[in-house]
Amino acid sequence: MSFKELLSFIIQVITSWQVIAAALVAMFYIGLVSFVAENRRRRGPKVTLPKPPKKAKREPAAASEEAEDDEAPPRRRKPAAAAE
Image (tube, rainbow, N blue to C red):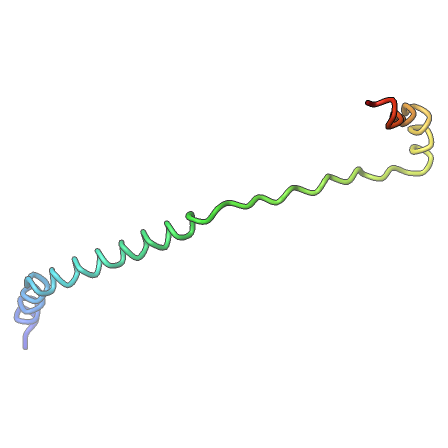
């Protein structure tokens, strides 16, 4: 079989309606599977967990003593009887 005969045979196979139909069906199937997989991934309810509070960076001991002097005293809660 010469190169020209082989080339014409390959072109006839590729352009036959059976090969074209099988390629279209395969592309449609792959697209459908991708679409379903993408929708299933998004479908569930989004559950967001609360973010943990950020930890303050620790300062050296000498700097933290100075910071304590500048801080306001903690607030006191009102007694339960007075709150009503």
